[in-house]
Length: 131
Length: 120
Image 1 (tube, one colour):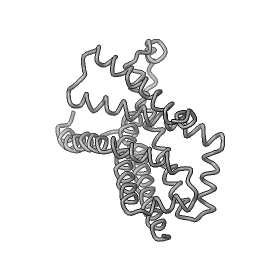
Image 2 (cartoon, chains in turn cyan, brown):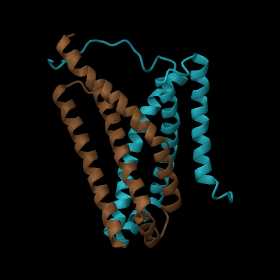
Image 3 (tube, helix red, strand yellow):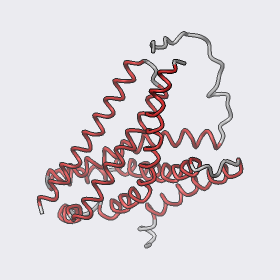
Image 4 (cartoon, chains in turn cyan, purple):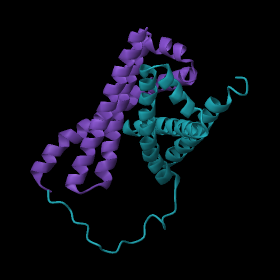
């Protein structure tokens, strides 16, 4: 197939005029969280590689992860992971043909959003609340 | 559209679709187990971490998780690249780079897990 040359034709505005809706926002969020946790996967391997390289290397990794940047990344990873997991299940339901009614789409969508926040808070704050 | 292209892309696309769902399904319990494990062991001392991750069952679970996660990630990133990059050479190059990086990562992970198991 010949490579498509991008002709500089004017485009009608799309992104900035279309009202964000739960459907579109959650959809792109699924893609974005997917990309973000791909980086997390790299981090996971770094952790195990560090452990394999010895105590000093491992502690270096842990040291980074407990720094403010590390904590921030871990928090963002937790949010992204739970979101991608919950929305992924929502996707799998659609693949099985379930939940296409608009009311179900919206309801499951909100469940995903709240579930993400709740699970993240449980993981991050329950230990401090003495759970 | 060229019939030949459609026929060649068809089976590959369906396979991609199916494997993405299969890996996703397997990852639901597997990634949860992994996440919870990291939660409990991420801040372990070096010795505790090594003891835990060199346990046979744990090591196997970690390896299985990594394999399935890498496969799922590769397919997901492939989709993203195919959606946004249309220059044939750039697209193919990126797809190859992603594949090599991810599977190289997996090799690194496997070697690490083996080394950890051997220190015990």
